[in-house]
Length: 241
Length: 147
Image (cartoon, rainbow over all chains, first blue to last red; front, side, top):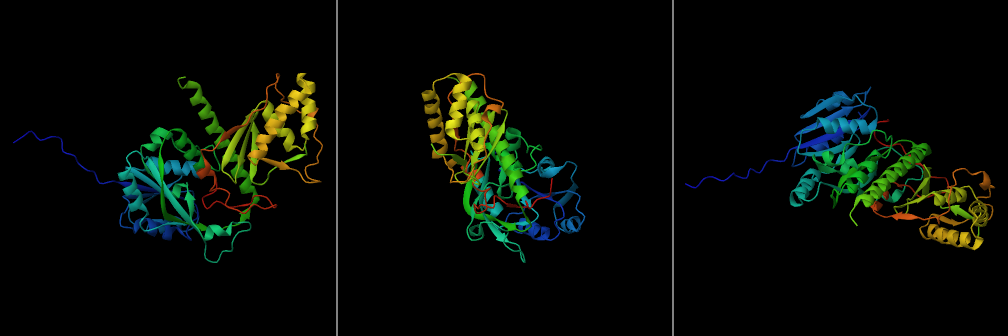
């Protein structure tokens, strides 16, 4: 008998899903059902709760494979980072309490990453929809309710966990645009994030309209872009002639 | 050269440490202009006419007016090309700019430059999920926990 070579053990992919929430009892059950009812079931769902005063925790606790952690940090970025740090899966995905994954999201995205070893992650298209009973917010682009768009948002993202060692966690100094800032850093670090043509996330639109949020977001987007510009200049400065 | 106006609300900008970072939310392109360019951008934001800016530059840096005009025309041409500014209509942007009081002019003259970045289109084009309107750039509250 020949000496057995090291056999190739194809490991079952393990998936962690991070859900950050505060006071989400209206929609969180729907979000969790969408995560847990597809053909591929994640190994764990990590809920980072920002001191919810409603039934969020009670509802989340009724679902299997869900652990709830009280957020220790402040802000959305901090919550994401706590979730990432708790995650033990080979792949990490995200969802908001009020969004819905399509049934095939995880299966399609896992398949993509298995077929594209050069990709560190992938996003997909997203479809906005109006919350039941809600009115279209003023100046909201109504066409977004009809057609899906490219979704570079955490809720549409599936990554290999190693991406965070390469890119870093989210920047907690960003009170807004923390996800765009991270995607920019991932791009500047040379991480390929694929884009699936399918619509894999349904994004609920609800809540009051405020112009302050717009200004705040733009300010933070500009800070993120400034950071990216500085990184590009540094890279140019050190590259060989 | 007619008076100019920043192409709001699609164009937003911040000036930080002598660098103007500008975003065109319609194209998803973003831009940087530093030093003299950042000051010229600030002057345009405040409603200064290009000819007035040229006058300040000539006084400050002792260069020929024709050189200042040429450098500014090239710079403004690029701002127009990228949709960052447009011609102001009558009555728009008529706040008088006190250019000579503007601090932060660099010690030495160099022609203002615009750096153009197009690598984040798909990241930025998602964000302006609203119709461009004169009312400004309202946003729904993010559906995530507040910071």
